[in-house]
Image 1 (spheres, rainbow over the protein chains, first blue to last red):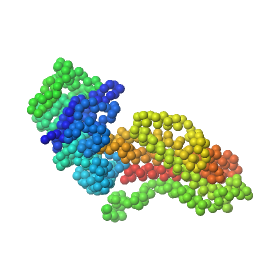
Image 2: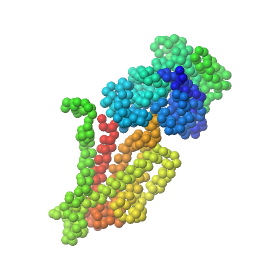
Image 3: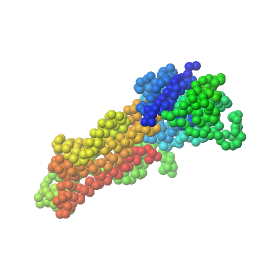
Image 4: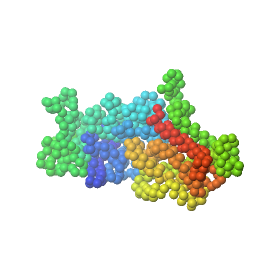
Amino acid sequence: MAPVLEVSGLSTVFHTRRGLVRAVQDVSFSVNAGETLAIVGESGCGKTITALSLMRLIPMPPGQITSGSVKVDGTDLLQLDEREMRKMRGGKIAMIFQEPMTALNPLLTIGRQIAEMVMLHDNASRAVAKTRAVEMLHHVRIPEPERRAREYPHQMSGGMRQRAMIAMALACKPKVLVADEPTTALDVTIQAQILDLIGDLQKEFGTAVVLITHDLGVVAETAQRVVVMYAGRKVEEAPIKEIFARPSHPYLRGLLNSIPRVGSARGLDVSPDERLQEISGIVPPLNDLPVGCAFNPRCSLANDQCRAERPAFELKHGDHYAACFQA
Amino acid sequence: MSTPSPAAGATREGPITPGLLSDIFYLMRRYPLGVAGAIIMSGFVFAAVFATWVAPLDPFTTNARASLAKPGGVYLMGADMMGRDVLSRLIHGARISLAVALGATLIGSGLGAAIGLACGYLGGWFDLIVQRITEVMQALPLLVMALVITASLGPSLQNTIIAIAIPLIPTVSRVIRSNVLSLREMPYVEAAKATGMSEWRIAIIHVLPNTLAPLIVLATAQLGSTILTEASLSFLGLGVPEPYPSWGRMLSESAAEYVRTAPWLVIYPGLVISLVVFGSNLLGDALRDALDPRQRD
């Protein structure tokens, strides 16, 4: 099966007063229809910029996508002109955002906002679009969709709004759904419902999902493949089971060790004392990366080689890629 | 359509799909001050439209014997120096004053909003150039600009409206521009971009409605100042020409001379102007709240 979304060598930079900030460097991945790929990493590692680059929503200037390609169904989005790109956005590749509270216009009804999208892409009449909006609200399991379609965002809870956002994103049956931290702003029970919902709709529509998150729990529940990013680069990529069973990169190991858990259910070597391990230090500023491996100042395994040259992103075993000399 | 709920539950939950009429009744109960403003304003509009029938006397007929007649009798609000009935002149003056106030405010706010929206949303060179022009306009006092414009266009109702509208543009466009600058960064604008909407459509559908609140407040506040500007222009002989009565001129002409001897010549026009400004502000405030779905529920 040919992948629906193929990203290769994507690099995005920002020209700022403090110099060139390389937010995303040489990131490649592909997602098949119906598959979920998770991109994980700390704040500031380039996850969101990657997502926005896929949609070509990077503010330019100061941002610039310097190289790479983003192919959806074989069409390279980075080569399209703005008008063609607008047709792709929402039509072929849609996005849901982190803040359901503010990602909907407070002055328009939910139904109207979904209908706008349908009218835009399917050339549907207002009446048809409205019916579609109600259908989509029903799809995302909002009770009483006819009534809810006439309500304004402030009349809905956070979870409801995120459902409405999902309804809007999927209204035109896009091939690819980019979900940027879709559950971060929601409480835990709602998170699970939203993730289930995305999973079910994905099966129904065969959508390829790129899930951006910092929550490894969410990853474990939903993704088939995982890309770990650090300081704008991919540092590890593997199928979900590999990621949790055999994390290669010390950064990923650090991330996994920093999650509180009940017992030692994951089969990792849990430290005997109850204290959580943290990764010391902070993410380096992207305009001033250390020489060698970007992670070396925070890495307990770092040696002279790590401090001198950047490790290549290579196959370590099976289907497991990592960029680390020590893995 | 849902079935109407029993009376007991109707107050809080209400019918699920209220019609336009019940919406209006609900809003009237919610904003009694707005209703007061609406009544005041519609009273003035009524007087302006039907002035010929409403006014008790002819506003142009002079009567030497009734010069500076005190209020009472035939002249309910007194008469001016030429013996013309103040009440009738006020009623006829509503035509000109409201035409000037509404016309200038609508034109000024409309153009100002359009320019502000374009500047805030497009930014770049366009914004830079328009902003510099705006600054030049703002450096001139409103009245001086209006004077220059009427002087070059000649005195007439139309030109008075234009002359008062143009100086309003910079203020409105500035406020709208700054508002648009912050709205442009709202997540829902980015979300709209992610749905493939064009910039132009986003500006109209998502940004413009969100600037309505400050626009309404600004416009209703300016309604009063336009009446006063018209008064000044008329006083200087550049507004609506005599013998057509305008509130502003009635007030300003008599203010200096008759305030001690015939105070009704000052009090009544002043009262009428204050009442219109008051009414438009009340209406504007209520309108702003009523148009915001977050305030509605």
